[in-house]
Image (tube, rainbow, N blue to C red; front, side, top):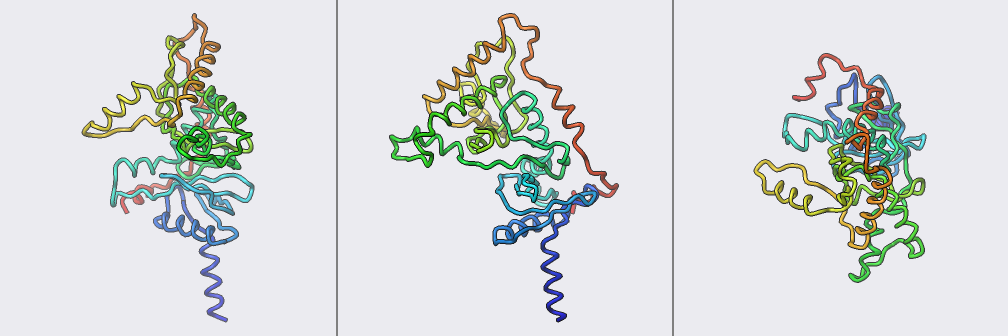
Length: 313
């Protein structure tokens, strides 16, 4: 009987994961996250993540992850995004570790920034998110990835898209709406093909991006440069970055086929002509301040005075 109780206790313990306390990330953070993913993928019904101030979420499904984040589904049907790694000065990589350290903050900032500039980006619940710890966002039913759509343009290579032929025009028209929503930008940070998905709820959306960008100015109303099509300037900058001693951040844009590139350039051009008359009141096209008012309201954990210790352990 005693052994049964011990086993039950261990089983209950593995379902509760204390990730943050008083704004401090758990020393066992990575092990706990990896174990939670393993349990869910092995059929566990639910686990519980506990954050600062005893905030907790019951997790029912692992949805996937990228280079810096894991995404889970909660019992209320939302998506919970958390950092994948634990920051440490041991085995420190300045680029990767710093990115991981700010992965949640960067996501919240960039999402607020692009949302206030009307880009079709995933919807975030800023009131329920917490700086430095997690993001609560809308849980989308992803029907297709962007590469599935691009397979329509690869027929000459013997590639067949998983998307029914009858949906091609619908998906293309909706993608052009997404492209049109980016008209204020010549570049959006880290806008790769795998960040664009077709959802049951909102059609094509951008799941993730970074806030580094190149905005359009009013004097460039006739420019064909945009956030989705690589141009000679982008390629030259990437080549220079690749050969620079210190490296740098490459300009990332989806690799569009020529036919689709032409349509994207045209819809963005027309939108810019509509939005920017020849005499425009301001040289600025983007809204660079509204997002700040949004993120100011995002809750932050009250950190303890000994929080710095976790950065050197």
